[in-house]
Image 1: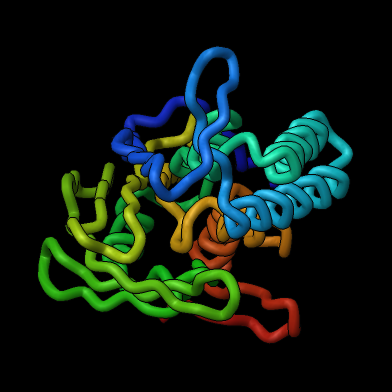
Image 2: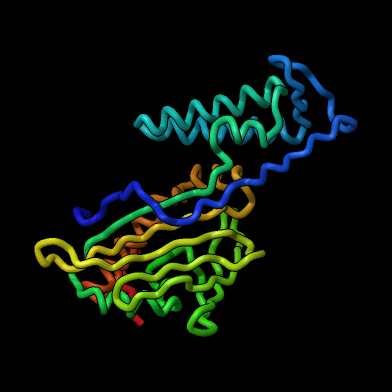
Length: 257
């Protein structure tokens, strides 16, 4: 779709992983490498590295691109670490950047005025209409809502979110509350498109996947790539707002509520 594009900058807060990793020398064998003490991986960590690395290699080989090559190389690194027992899962994640939150940024141009798009989106209970990863959203009040989403391996995750900033017909930002199953934040911006072509809708999301990094790896392996997912959902939003319905794979349209 010609209206879709990626935007590289994100103002969404970047939650940092914990820096308080404690290695108990009485419970782990210790080896010396480059003059520093490093904890030897447990059997469970080794197998997790081997399995996760294999998943990354397979995923990378499926992509005929530089990104696929880098993914396969990252998987090879995990396999090597698991085979040689030189590192814990946390150290491997730090080394190849797998413990970072997932960020997704997408923009679509919709041939509708900003106020109409804003009103529909602002009622979060409408979002599952075009966002397949959401099962339901319940709005409690002007600020707080409860979200239920599909998770890998047939599970669900739930969380409460608060609206942080709300500018009518322009901008909505939100974030999960403390203690949520899934930490996430994001915003949607509605901006007039050039040459009177409608409205540019930009969405930025950032989240820590439920179940940790390996869960995210397997989710990607089985076709749940976050960037592709959000892109598809914005395309469905465009179709819904412009045509009044979404053409499903079964050929049956799904209309606006």
